[in-house]
Image 1 (tube, rainbow, N blue to C red):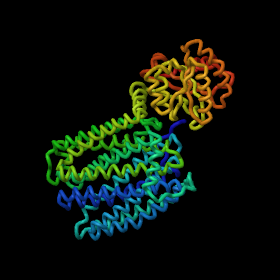
Image 2: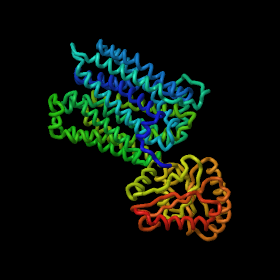
Image 3: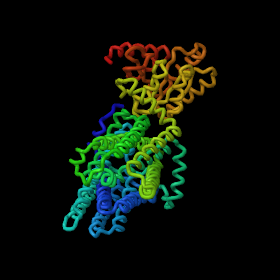
Image 4: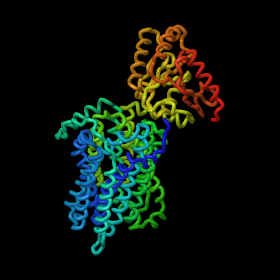
Length: 617
């Protein structure tokens, strides 16, 4: 279960070609879109520019709503690597048509090309998300998603910068269109060549019958996703992120020109701050979550987005509007650095927020429906952002609020949405509490966790009677853990709430009824057969009668349990019952059959603790 650095994935053929195709797609789409938006913002009247910018953003999202569910079915039905090759090949004629549309200054044709690029991305997105669990190990998913999210925004940033710069060379007699054509064509060809190196990804449901009625199929997949609240609310939360992201990014050209009074180069600077922030936030997710697939860091990202958005809005309201200022003049003006820092904060926290959500959807979706569930996520994202584009047009052009006021309104709405999702999905709140305790209130040092199998069933044995021990184990081990607890330990309200609402309900033993203990033994065996990772918390202070009654059946049961039984040592610097400050967690070698009794387990754990107590904290 040893973790590897997420950047090591860039040396693997099962990841690098996919990463390069992703960068190429987002580079080209953002190159064309930002060139178009900057032309609108700086060459048209303010009212007309705001309407066209929001219309272009809404039009860009329409294909995600129309074609995503079909793309998801194709991802489940056919080899995903072959689909990616075809999708990348079609990008080449699209970018040539886009260059021609800008050359003849035809706005309707430019909007049509924007629609085609969005359609191209709508077909690509479910396939690339669905292929990752096939090519990456489970413990690589969080880091892999962080790197791909970074790559996506790096491509978007590169495209946005190039589009903004090229738009400044679109005047008569200049060569902006030629630069646009050459860059988009070379990137499209590079992306296609990269896609040819993606390893095969055989379909999970090769006999799936494609339903070409998107409305009917969408309702079916929606019904399936709602059966699993973690998946459904992850879809809602991830779609909400794109609503927030689009609100901020789409307004940056007009915000820079009309609120800050700055030039096209400052637009590039603002886009760079937002995008670099998202990329850095995405990369830090693997370290914050320790490679685990958890909701724990999602609320941190959500709250950070709200604080950053509020700071940006209020700072901009106090900013003295300049007049066509370049980067140097803008940076010298009072209030410029807070605006840039708050923009970075919005992006940084957005990266922390979005990566775990996509990882959870990938990990928990049924293999047979993974592509379609990820496509459903795209549809929700498109629906949310289309609605917010219409709302933004109404607020900016009819109600006449300012863009800083729009940022403040969106940030407050973000906090309310986050609170709603936490209430509807208690697992998210539990993961957050567990993460805070494990990472902020304590500092866990782990050792030899590679003894714990990464996939197969195993039974961990731990003798800590502190109710906080399962929380630390839960947040430290990369795999989900199902705990086996005595009735006396389970009485703790915090522990009971955390485990029941955290995704995997515990198995309770040493109860007052013999029938309930027998059911516990049967549940342990069933979980072992299904490949789960179990952890038995031995409790020396359980009442003597039920404990003694269960010891003999449990000893016999454990000896015949055909899975590895691994001692797990957990202790703090001061005492094992005071799990705060620095905590040591270590897995020992699997036990032999002779040691698998209560007396043998306690003796083994005692000897292991006597050895590990010398470890420096």
